[in-house]
Length: 480
Image (cartoon, rainbow, N blue to C red; front, side, top):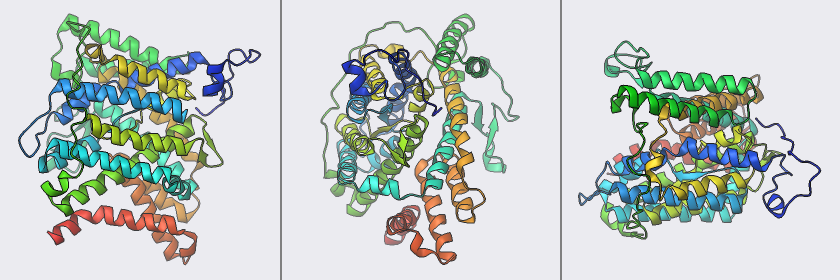
């Protein structure tokens, strides 16, 4: 995926737009950027429906709940604007939206201890902290300090994570119904026996096989074509046979009754920056903020590094324009608090656009504008089911897995740290946990081998920070 792509007209004089985004310089073309931006949007459009579902499922300390209209507008608007900013400022094919996992922390951990305005105030503070770290250069120095083999392991682990997300969202992999009474927590398919049954699963398998065939034939737009064709089939089949909605999951492939909807901006600016410290207590609010910062910091770091590597934007172990990219990511986190959509961050699904040839920020501008368009056409965002889009994540995960060949498996100082990084990310469903486990193991092994000086003070501090992160609940319990 990191191969250089030749421009369609190498002899043509680059236009101003070409020079601004460096389309030809990065071996791309306008058609690839447009296709990549569209593919990324289609792959992550589900967030417009899923984020409101998560945040709307919880109530704050006063019992107040947010409405779907408020949350859909906040989610689409923030993702659209910040992804366009990433394209213009960071010039990277990276799309941003409300982060999965961290939005659940906001909804089910932070909000119940305070008001929504106070919870979003902590989100803004998180973004400010990350911006300061990015602008000061500390965040970039931290990323550069992490050993190259662990960065490679991070890419592999995220690849497995992406594939698992795809398999789970499609219903191909599910939690075993009697997980409490068995040593096997997950299974293939549905029911107690773990069989692949139902039309939605068939759509997933068809979509996956179609993408494989198109990729094998080197058809341009293979992933996008696969998603589009599978969605059309899903809509037709669902209309013909009336599949039960619960079989599809979050998004049911139905043509909407109406195309245009009115956005609701009432959540925008409803923020209480420091009220959460009084409402939940100083220690609890600080722990909440620490969790948000750590998750946002390292989840984005892992995603940016991995996707940029796939796009061929890594030079001498460093991501091109990393400082600008990190600054935009921090602004996006704060913007998520100001709009009420939860922290926004770079999405793993950006890799699907890269797989289609995206190499510059032009693809991000396309993705962002499409998100902005959903403010008026929100009903259309609910047409693509997970079973049609999830195969793209499986394909991308497999391509990222290929990086595993660059891990020095014959070096005892990296075997266990790399393995833990790769395994913990998908097994715990969190990038931050994998990075932490790998860094701690790396530091411990270096000390055990009498090479403590080789760790580097920055990596050593990170290992201690992650040790505190993993034990924060125990410490909080002792203090409480």
